Length: 272
Image 1 (cartoon, rainbow, N blue to C red):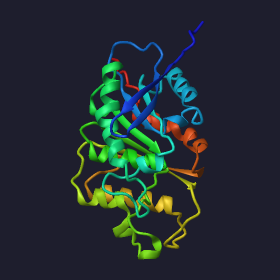
Image 2: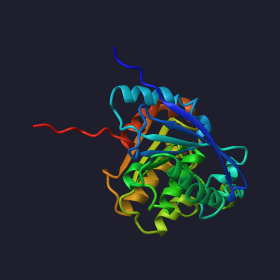
Image 3: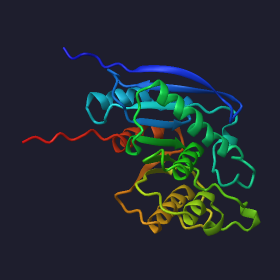
């Protein structure tokens, strides 16, 4: 009889001097967690793990041996989410994301050292993946870009790539005012960094340039164009377009197995 796999799910709280608050973490350890250094997923919006069915998804993938054993660190957001997620470069035109730099420092200087000192996780770039959803996806991308010495892969689910420094009514232009596109355009390529990007055809209804394509898809395609201008190719970028996909945890949970297989692909055993 096959032994039942079971995850070890733990809750931790750390006091952040950068955010001046307690940050809750949900840590999901793989079955038979041991002393080896495990790949790790640093996941924004960790409070959404239940609505994403993350535990069931991990167990299903482990049973099928579809992914390597990994540690998931879900970083909970709270009512300050709109200020703590964004881009380190600047707040948006509404002054949202004003604490994005402080959140990044909290992750790099407090959360990661705590997890590395408490759990058996790898420091190898290829085994450190950061990801998030919507505004948390923008945050994950921004942090990966600004701290390439910590992360080898980044996942962005329905990312808020529209994040802009100018209102539409104030002469907004795509080529100048989307902040993360500008950040990537003006800086050097982050060698070795890989990108997984998802958008749903029903993420939204907006079509600011009236080209028949919703903004969520346009912004993602334009981001990919910026990355390719930097020298990244199709081996570095995975774009998943979900037909009928919506801007919610149901869609993100359904596409999560695809992301996890990309991020933590099981090692192929060669015989003969």
